[in-house]
Length: 476
Image (tube, rainbow, N blue to C red; front, side):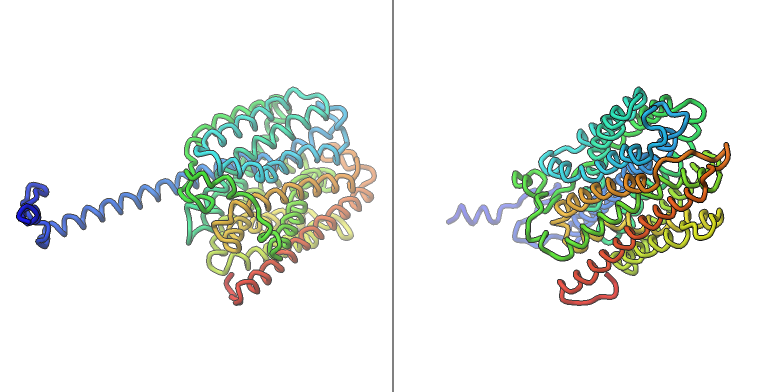
């Protein structure tokens, strides 16, 4: 008994002061402890904010590379199908050549269904990101040695597409988990890199093509992409709890598996269908904007590349603006409006009507960049909002896989509708200009209907999500 009493009353040295455990602490000590805790908390918040900024910058640069290069494939297509092509079998063959680009960009999206399970199992994602950037760069490098279509399919399609998917998804999947209230704005900042990428790459690539040829242009693009990707790959890392469980847990093996309970939901069906239609329609203007401006409107190739740059720049600003607007008025609301307005801009501004109009086409380039940018920026945030953060990796991988399939349908079918034709531009218009205008009108109607169907599907998702949650909110 005595020893127990002695232990309870023995003074304990704390920071050079003598105190008894049962005795209340002095106000000085309490204040010092509180100040220390506040300092640690403030330091943690500052470090978290610094990492968020770094993550946004890395995501921006990654999209600058991946989506920026994808969006300017129309310049490669214009070269491959022209009289100056280095691939003779591609001359005048828009349908097949566009398939080269759509397979590459399609694998960027559809590869997520394979990349996300890898992310769930691998502790460090830096190697995945760096490996993807390396494979992507090799695809561009090897394409510079191609002289036939099958070689382009192996390099600028398959190898490039696999690399972009491994490079793209680690950042695009993990970044939203570091943001909550400003998730729409953060996603818009990251995806704005795709628009800036197109804005910068389009005129630079056209300059390289004109001055050094397609082979050297591909080699320069590959080397630059590899060098810049190194610091980007060194930043990204998973947040604890990614996928709904601890990142070090052995249970992560199934976090990306799409279960049937999610598939049976009407929201998933219409969201997947909308993603298919929108991806198919979204890629058509990017691939045929340049050829339309040179063949129908008699612009030079440098001016055609400028239109792609303008569209990409506007798209970049729209992704940020639409993200901020979505945080205020609702992400699903903004996405619905974006879907319908992008279809409207195609059908009213790009369609030829009685005669082609340069001012109307320039207006289309700007307006489509605004409206399409909103849809592309808001897909991941609406997935989180509808299905919850714990299901984000599952649904995100499936939706992007379907978007990849959609991109495989859009541009090649448009190329079949358009058929082969002579290039105009600096050497004058094609002799069959009226027939060529009608062909482009068919392409425009096809594109507009795809985007209109996408808007209808997104509106259905909006309604079904409110019904499933049992309450209608104007802001959603």
